[in-house]
Amino acid sequence: MSQNISVSKVVKLGNSLAMVLPKEMCEELNIKKGTYLGIQLVGENIIIKKVLK
Image 1: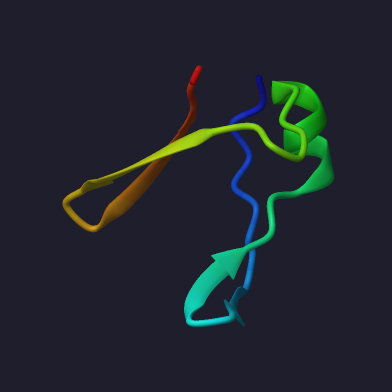
Image 2 (image 1 turned 135 degrees about the horizontal axis):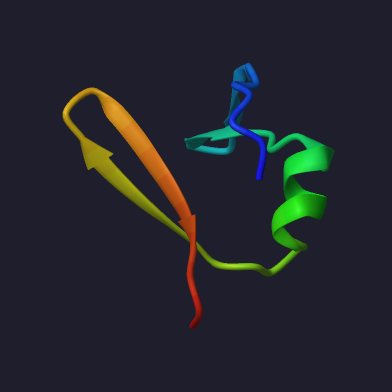
């Protein structure tokens, strides 16, 4: 897995905020529409992990 940082702009989606995941990262991690992602706040960092549900 690459350790490159990708920049993504946060956009408004209804009453929420959203960000777009780069296609290359989704392909590498097999993330598709409907995939569940866990989101964790650690200090000032957001950690996103693929989870089974």
